[in-house]
Length: 261
Image (cartoon, rainbow, N blue to C red; front, side, top):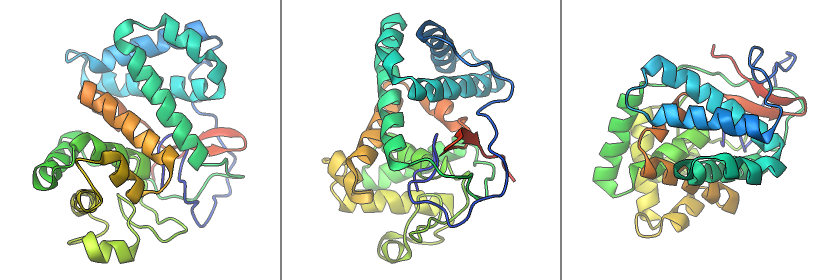
């Protein structure tokens, strides 16, 4: 699966019979590159500030996500947006745009929203402990594990199999799990360690691009994972922003939010 922002690259088996909601019923649409740059500056800056309360980080992360969704619909705005961003944020914005573009290629719009089971994610500190345990055991930078987890199932929020039969938080097919997994394919902890084990066997950490390509042999996937990982390497608090992103999928009516439950 490639779940984040636009949903799963391996399309789910079923679709829900419900009208697609707007990306955010209460958020005003950003009408210009200048408005979008202002929204992104506020969101990216606030997320990165250690003094920002957790509840506010969650709000800013949704603002950030909606701004990038809007930018995805107006890629011609990117040069003006980058020109208006503070120098310290330009690379982060470019990386997020590149990641979103890569994910979008993997996810053609669906005719209707999928019938994924969306649940709450494990707490961020718990996820970080799993990533770091895997990094210590297998040498895979934790940021790459977080990026894959984000893209595959939005940090375990999407509790559904893909049509290709991939299962669990890190989306293993059973045959690959049999070789690299230990424990429960549906356990977030066990799946993260299995992903690190697989990436190490595929060339990580010396050849991360090669290893990520082995995980999902598509250059757009490699671009997306690398871009998100680089942002988290540059500032660990970028992880908190990604953690609070909600589950949206691409439909022909536009980005559609999937409610938990």
